[in-house]
Amino acid sequence: MSQATPTLIRPTEEHVLLRDLARQFTDERIRPAAAEIERTHCVPRELLAEMGEVGLFGVAIPEEYGGSGLGETGLCIVMEEITRGDFATAVTYGASASIGAMSILLGGNAEQKRRFLPELAAGKLFGAYALSEANAGSDPGAMRTSARRDGQDWVLDGEKVWITAGDIADIVTVYAVTDAKKRAKGGISAFLVPKGTRGFSVGKREEKMGQRGSATVTLVLDGVRIPDELRLGEVGDGFRIAMQSLDRGRLALAANCLGCAREAHALSAKYAAQREAFGKPIGEQQAIQWMLADSATEIFAMEGMIERAAALCDAGEVFSRESAMTKLFASEALDRIVDRAVQIHGGMGYSSEFVVEKLYRDARVTRIYEGTSEIQRLVIARDVLKRGK
Ligand code: COS
Image (cartoon, rainbow, N blue to C red; front, side):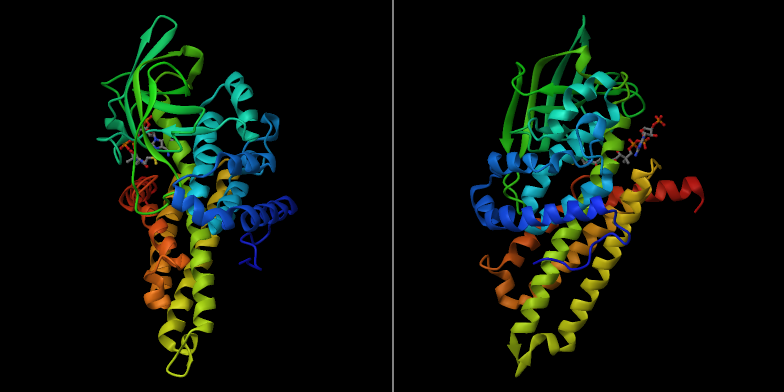
């Protein structure tokens, strides 16, 4: 179901080519596999490897580190397109290409970037991001995972929960308390923990309402010894790295919402033109027309917000507020759009034989993960009060 209109108002030629590539890959490789990915609860490693081969993992990584340097704008384009085929595949991809790689790009020193980013860009190394804990979701400053210095090493203990792709990641950015008195104010540090490190293991896997193909796991750290050279940023800089990575992650997530919304809307428009009631297609009934009009309008707003926020990010501006606004609006609009899609499909929309049933389930978590809607409002309101506007 290809869209004729590109998201960008003035896309560069490279961004147009990138969208074509991501769209073709989605239509040929991801969409046909989506039902199987959902059924088996697994995005095949071979599919991720293929995405690496065609260059999708390096989109937001600068050229000097082996990426294509197409920035957050490029990443949003890929996220949107892949999500049209399968949300679970897109979030699995994003665990490495977005939030996993970005924490190294934002927090790493030159040596760490040279060592890890080219392999992440090629999709040969898979990254992930581990911040949340059982009692520290919206309030990560309350985390309990600790890192204590021991000679040239650090020893990490604790448990991280809700980690996307934590089961397949080769390298995980783990945030841990290094100063319990300071916490979010300089008492949290970031560490790169390679898979296979002694004491580092995968625990429980969540059974989820939607996005079932993407693995969401607990990671257990039991006396995990990490050399100081795998610490990201300065000691105490971890909270800043985590938040800056989330600024980008939230924007990419808004692009996921846009992709899912487009799919639900296109399916609804097609169904409304075909399905008849009272002697004519339901799309000719005003009740259905209003739903289609509202969804089209919200999709248009999402496109504009994502484009502007990504442009700010790529220009090196602070965009925390814009990222939070875009994530808030996109996830809440998506919720309304998938709800309308189910309503338009009637009883068929409630059947797992129809894709909109899956889209409805896939969408719900977007108002929760990478910061709930309530946290986005908090970020926005704090900035309003700080700037006085
Ligand atoms: N960019 C850079 N620095 C940031 C930042 C950002 N976006 N957000 C916060 N910081 C800095 C602050 O400037 C502050 O630094 P100083 O100590 O130098 O002043 C420090 O981090 C602490 O910030 P703050 O006082 O705002 O921390 P809080 O504990 O109040 O937390 C919120 C702020 C609620 C916004 C943060 O905890 C949050 O985003 N929570 C949701 C987490 C989340 O999204 N979880 C999902 C997990 S990932 S799937």
